[in-house]
Image 1: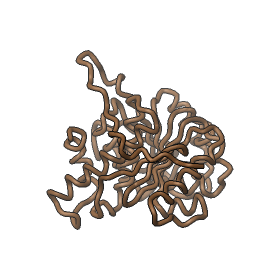
Image 2: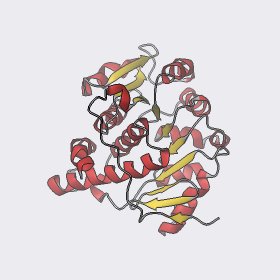
Image 3: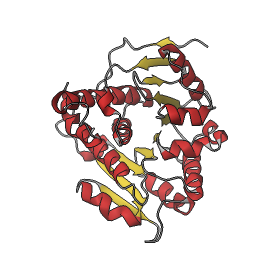
Image 4: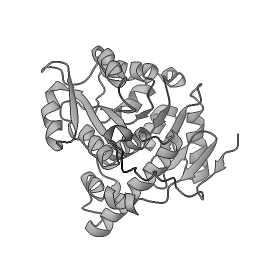
Length: 290
């Protein structure tokens, strides 16, 4: 099946904000992630979502790291789940999360989530049952890779954001070197979704975005972004854009562009060697203005 390269089409932009608008007009984001020792990942995703325009952001994490996540930014709301002895979220938290998500516009699943058997079961349940648009990243991708049948019947629109290693675990295939071949591989993954609602963001140099029918190649970004946490930032950015009303296709395209642009601005001022993930968040305002 042929794919249309739409890379030359100008990137989508968010509409100007009405003077009379309020925070509820810009979406409610729920980020599900975190585990003992991995409080930073969901916090970065939450910060990136706020800096990308989401009206309200809630980060759902194990209770044992709730206080740590809250300390990153007072604008982030947190939902602590489980008891003090629980190091990660698990299948026992499914109903609480589904009920909480009913009030949300978009969901992110995966940053710092962990890989316990109960967490894997949680991911698979949420992927199948949550009807909200969802960005799936990190440990959530690895959970889906353990049972690919779960990918075929999502509860709603999904954006999968694998790096090459996660992509190989999902598909059993090594990422191709040529851009068009990588796009074809990512499109094939999209078509695993029987509902036709999947967008894949295949990360790396010249990140590919595809919905299975068309693809775009992202021109922004630099090697300084090859550092822990930058993927969590991308997850938050894309989720915020979906929450503000963009389609999953448009949110993914604009999200990877702005993410890379923030990285380029950060590298220009700080250098590539010293760049860290939180620098991207600091430069997001300028990237959105650009």
